Amino acid sequence: MKVYSHFIDGVFTNPSGQTIASVDPSTGKVWAAFEKGDAATADRAIQSANRAFATGPWANADAQARAKILDRLAEVLEQSWQSLVSAEIQDNGKRITEVSGQFSGLHTWYRHFAAEARTLGKEPQKNAIPGVSSECHYIPFGVVVAITPWNSPLMILAWKLAPALAAGNTVVVKPSELASASTLEFAALASQAGLPPGVLNVVTGFGDEVGEALVRHPLTRKVTFTGSDLGGRKVAEAAAGNVVPATLELGGKSAQIVFADVDLNNAINGVLSGIFLSNGQTCVAGSRLIVEGAIKDAFIARLLDRAKSLRLGPPMVQSTQVAPLANEAHYIKVLTMIETAKIEGATCLLNGVDIGKDYPGFYIGPTIFDDVSTDMQLWREEVFGPVLAITSFRTEVEAIMLANDSNYGLAGGVWTSDTDKGARVAALVNSGTVYINHYRSVDPGSPIGGIKQSGYGRELGPDAIKDFLQVKSIWTGTLRVADPFPD
Image (cartoon, rainbow, N blue to C red; front, top):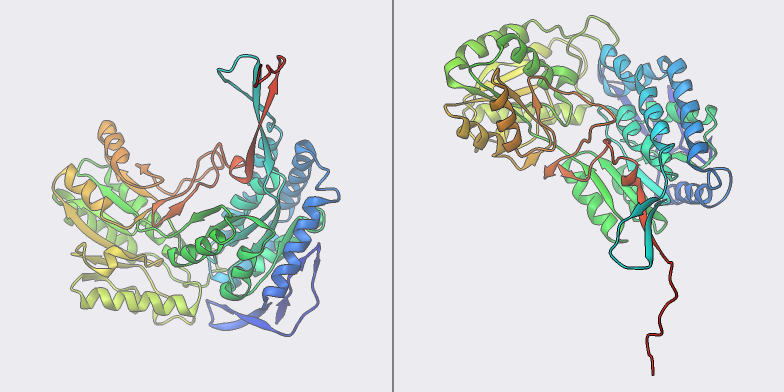
């Protein structure tokens, strides 16, 4: 069994003997262990990051030099991403086809922000004051704490780390205690690529023991968090204690609106992709299907046929289409929510619990409920699993009302052959991202983030690096200053 230590100041620390077991979700057996950090560990990591920010090669590197280092990291990832795959799969059970797809493109995130770093500079500003010029300078915060989830650790880390480093910050990462292995493996690769010691540190452990200590540390200057809305509230409260800005990307209960004029096959593929890829364990999962009544029966019949055909299996097997849930606690949560939906009166059209019971590990197959009312738990709360809730609508206004009847607002989908209708409805759906006639696209040039309880702030997009920079205004007088107190 491999034991992973913290990565601080460019090296892996000596084992302390206090560890957290990592369970392979496909077998239910322990395969590795992570060091269990505490407040002292958090302090060591923050102090290391602060030294690297204040002194040494990173402190003296300009944007061009930082871009070169990010480009080298991209080259190493492009050549060595395969070495990271098995660690993440054993940690969180994601299918090898999905992990390989993410990791084969990891280098592009770092290369994109290397290019963006080269464009950084001061910006002249207009003002109406005679004899005075002004400009904005962008300066890094300093030590950034990045807290990442267990569902896609390295991809989501890239969204945070690449722009944070491009901006000149140093970073302490606290990955989920349930899936830390790939982040630690990545840290070793980053060091090989020439990232100076202390610029990237990784501390493992529980959120209330090491995560909170990182966020509350007096040298922490910026926090970026991806996770549950409950975790986001705790992070926001801890960060507010030192008036530290936080970017929060939290849960979702995304609606997929399907109109009767839709390309049926395209919409079926989109709905399947939205809810059953990654076994529903994504924040943008399209977990609420709102389908026009005129096509509801036909749509559901075809959807069920496709969902029933999906193959469960080991995540390391290329032909597997549905892999296990990521950990036992989450598996129990999803089981409980499925049972609650039945008790509350939703109609179970496809029971993934029955499908998954013959497999070792934490397997639940595609699960579909019809007749889900807006007061049911399945409508209101995030499952973060392969569970789809269906209801119908008669009018466009009703569809929009149903889509917006949620405390979340991360993503949504609109499916229609009417271009004007698609644009009109998308504009009225209260979510940070809305897809029209496709789903789940992501690109470094397009922002990601939510409204309501899905969080605040944005990752990626044209202002991604500026989110990790502070603005300083510098004014220059070009005329002599008049005596303010003449005789």
